[in-house]
Length: 303
Length: 314
Image (tube, rainbow over all chains, first blue to last red; front, side, top):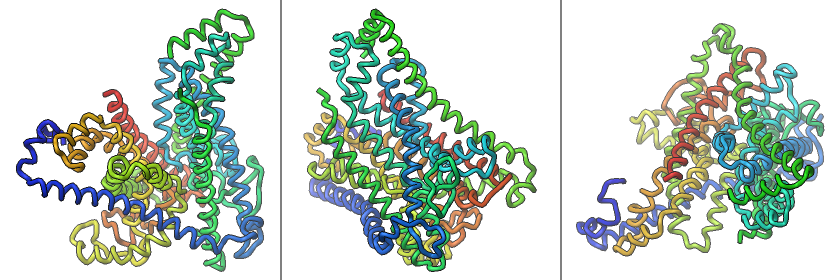
């Protein structure tokens, strides 16, 4: 690639060997290959969305959303998993949003050129690469040391998900805080406002839409997590809304356990697994679309 | 930036107690949040290490399968690297094409929509990929895999006998390919669009076709971003759990054969499968394997980040 003949300066002499029609033909072939590769890459997406819709709709019913699987032999619904999804994800967000946004404030407003800032920037990048199952093992190890092995709690899952969510929140918050124009800060200082009030009353409100968008996308990323919850919150049949007491289950784990240990009526279990998958995709897509709409509607004026 | 900070601090310092307290609390809170995150990451390593230690010090006959820890983890690590390598080898050319299509070929009007479609690939939960892989892609891949065995069986990868269910390393690798595609292409695309305009227009002005312009300016400019994107994708593929857990039919063998019924498991999939039913030393052993996975992905990501930051400095 880096060979000198590849540089544009020698372009005039390079194609002398190949006639113009051949170069044009190659251009067309390569364009077609690239466009074809794009189409090929989108094929799984279309197939997946189509199959999930086709196989998920039969399992959707009022019962699916309103009853739990408790005592239901080969039947029941996913209400316990929906409650579990809301509680586990909600607690994870409650842990990671304040920490994430405060850390982003540190990075953009207070960090300057300090060593902590450089370390934090670097390790946040590292954190985005932690495999989700490792985050789950961490939460398990942490709680097992305190409560002994065999412990399964909703909040353990939330801690695991928070480890995955925090770096996403920091990254997106940092981006939107960075683009808050400096003259807004300067105008506030000129009026004698202390720095902390400037951040609280000027910087954060200006960046608010971007912060909300970032949090929503981060929630969308963790709401469908399965692996870290398999090792922390376990599997359960009945509704449990207390994250500090006993097992919990989210929709993704529900889909997995319906697939893995189908009931007597195998197809009904698979239907419920697909229905849960469809519900998850719908939630994730709604979160993503709404986040983008919010951002487009209320985005930070950068001038 | 620095001047405003100074102005703010001067003003804050010049005035009375209330505002100084407010500033102190706020800045301490933000520092605390930063330190918490570093502590969290250190905690991940530390707690895994503590819970893994009993497995390291235990004798072989007390561990699951009666094997030493190294003998237990090595085949899993092999499977992990094999699945991720298959995924990266397939994903990188595809991702470069996707990135080029969006950055240089597609009409500007639809670029936003195309980008959204690629992002959607990244947003789909892994459990859904797993279900799709086992119920849709796997059965569909049985025919092609039989063809691979018949026509290319002399290559060790396609030795066969081809699986009749599609629960093979190749199918797992294909699903991982789809899952990491958005990351690799996002990193590449971000740099492709930054290719200096004067280089691109210079090439076109000298009579280059669009493909020649891409080959001579965009690809050399984006080369390191392709590598770092591939490393980030590798990191994701190494740690991906559910898709592999659901799709792969495992038997603990060590083989390069991608299309047969018996495959090596991966570290992550093995944890997801065995952890819920394990107790005692078996749990510690699984956590030890998780620590190995953590170390492998950490090194991969560090290399990727090092390449990216070097490129940013230039």
